[in-house]
Image 1: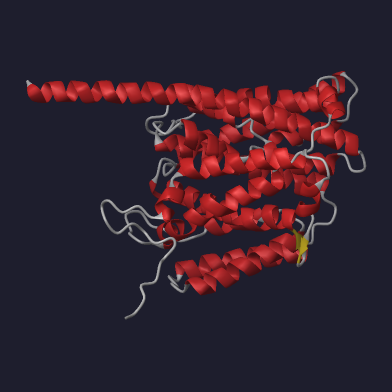
Image 2: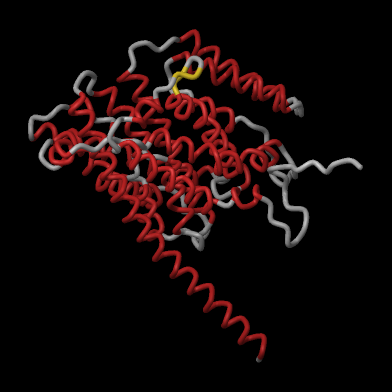
Length: 410
């Protein structure tokens, strides 16, 4: 008798059948796993003995475990984000170019205003201006995790808004790092990575259906991007955005790969990344300096207040002065909550913290503590706002259902 093979991430085949893949594909589950991993990392990193630091720096081939998580595994998450964004551009809430302008303008505002606040703090109080890029970035993984947990009743278009905002934001921050904080960009490797993206796009257009071919091209492209000195996750976004999809076409590469990769991304990739990246060591000296030094003060005010002001005003002004509109079902109160979530800089903002102050470990620790504090406050504030919005939407749906039932009984 032939044994039945168990497929770990196969789709549900019956009305009442629920596979592990379907559980992990739910955003709330992935968000909770990520938050648990974050708490574990923070507690572990602050235990005596520095076992967390030793573990994170274990070398595995060419990279340490921490770098494999940030440069390798996170690329898979960004590939999934790129696929989702491509689908939104083709047939979703961003399919009208004018509507995509709103989150893009919000992202630009959410980069410029925080940087301006940081510069203002450190100009007035004679601080250091090198960290101006730290409060620019939004941690897309954490922001989406909070939205998934608290905003289950909010329109899907709001997630697309945050996804677009965060990706544009992160691309801009990585570009700033590459231009202003990196001195060793390897143009040959960068060119090779772009050739890989172009080949990926060309074979997609030719409708080649061999996934192994695209896996090899993707790995080579990722390696070339890593060697170029530009953050390797850029490769994931670009490959996702050039993946073939067509409106109303079933089982195209975007849908097929999303279905296959999403459970791995939500259930394994993102929690491991959080575990390896969220271990910020917090000393008493650093926490005290956070509220007296202009560098951490500029980071905190930039991430929390700067993001809210920049994102909300960027979106509002664009909608007011152009033909662009918010996605279906989104209201300005929802945008305000997303603007608060954009202040979650966390892991993405930690990279420029290290690059901006080389050799000054005390200031780097203060900057990281500021990023952590601002991100927690932003997550709580945005989560509270969006939870209230979600409950109002749930109540409105319930009232509408009652009215509909009442009309039927009449």
